[in-house]
Amino acid sequence: MQDSQYSIYYKNKSAKNLNESSSFVQSNYIIAVKSLESGNFLMTFMQGFDEFLVASLYPSGDINLTTIGKCAKFEFIIFNDPDYGIYISQKSMPDEQLLNVLSDVTKCTGQTFEDIFQLLQSQIIRDFSVIQLSELDNMHLEAGKEQVLEQSINRSKLVKHEKLAIGSKCSTLDIKRILWKPEGDEFDTLVADGWNAIRSDKVYQSTALQYVSHELDNTDQLAYYEFVYQSWVPSQHKHIERKIIRID
Image (cartoon, rainbow, N blue to C red; front, side):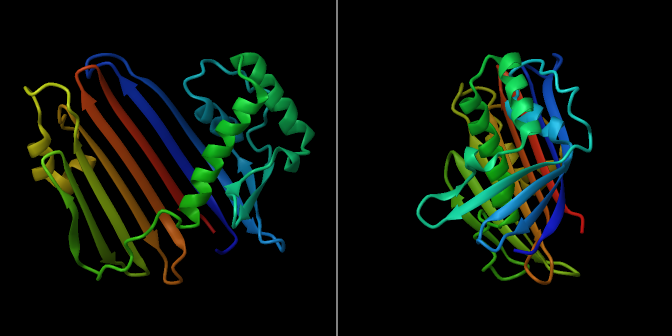
């Protein structure tokens, strides 16, 4: 994995129904990932750590992070252990500024330092795993081909591999029927719309859609990643987006 910088956008939005105001959080931040001689990695938040922190703790309520400058940098060492997997150790966090910020967050949320650290660790590892291409397992498909990975009464999962001008793109679309009530189910409509439903404003009651796309350059390094999740049930409409763009 090459040393690079990435711009990351995240949005999590939910509403009890389409006619009510939404509860949402969004964040924009930039990270740099660098390989270390030890085989581990250094992830540096170049800007937007305050937004990352608020989104990671959502929906914990209002958190006052005005003491964090927009361009304040925070560093984390990511350990890649063959026995324990990917993790972050609290012992690798000597940054006094970071410790003070997390201490303030414990006062705002009532959560323990350990709870907050675990939330941060899960979000940092999530981004790192995407950049490392840990979740990508369908690049062996022939370019231009679409394949049905699963088709049943309650689920349809598709994957396709496309050749780009520079590099390639692998996309997965996972559609599920949510067992709520027999009436009003629009699973078949969603399956028929397929890939077109990703950008659509249509409502597909009692269903869920998950779209994941990786774009790689001609050296098979991540250039662009997109994740979209939507679910529609009578009690809630949920919409999550994540984009990771390599910027150097």
